[in-house]
Image (cartoon, rainbow, N blue to C red; front, side):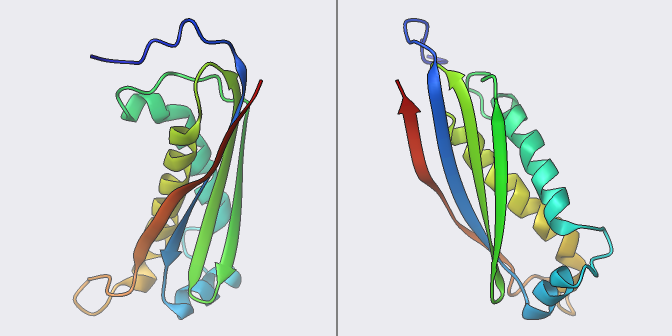
Length: 144
């Protein structure tokens, strides 16, 4: 057992898009919109963390191949007290990049949580409203 043998495959353009959601207090989303978060720019920090995570995917998921990533793009969309994060990853390689896109989204969402957790805690230090959910692959394709 181990990594799948992809040595007979050809390099082709591989693209994957993944999405996930974080649910926050409305007041926290307002603070993000106003740029009032103590740790700084939430979306720029989440984007950088997500890009680093994409590049480190084979270091944290044991059977993933190290893929020469060519492009990573993030989009952030606010809807009421939710923030949707999308990550698109591209590479010319022998295997897909969906795990990299999922890892990027996951780490971007965790980074948002980390940056705003002081606003999300209740009196007991718990997070009664905060949720990360609906992490999924939206699209995976290869161009021969």
